[in-house]
Image (spheres, rainbow, N blue to C red):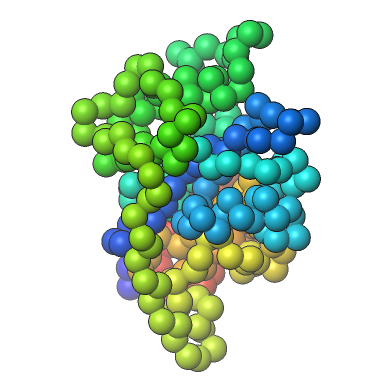
Length: 249
């Protein structure tokens, strides 16, 4: 029986060898030039192809039909998918993040690209991200700009494609193969509770325990956990629906 652990980064189990990155896209289409998009991926090469292929190819609705897009920068080195997804959310919504309250709003004369770099520069300097072993990688040297403030000394600034991905573990046979095999956050997947697909902008919540790879919408898990606490609005903890009894999230 495993003790329950609280939801949050402290309870998220990192999987050595996995690549988790948060990237910045830049639109090269003359009709939409200057637009940017922030997203999460475990496979940068495939992800940019999906964006340029439209929603039918797995791209986001915000980028569909507006390509071509170039992935110009990626931040990687996150210990888990959850940590990267939280970084992605804060970068997308700096005005809603209490950790970025000191970052001013986008100026009228400020391009979207410059604003997102300004937000990124401050994110790398505040907890919890300042403590992570992150790498800031420019994928397109012609877009390179100096970050102000610069990243901390322990965060390298690099150029070129990211390192090769680690080989994915083999799938196990059996009725629980979908939960026991390592999921690919970029692949088409559905919530284990409602069976609906995940939207690109809402990353799934994953079980932090090794060996259990349940993926579900945050709202679906919240409703599941609150069944035993009908008088509460937000759950603090709960038992993973796809794990053995006693295993908590």
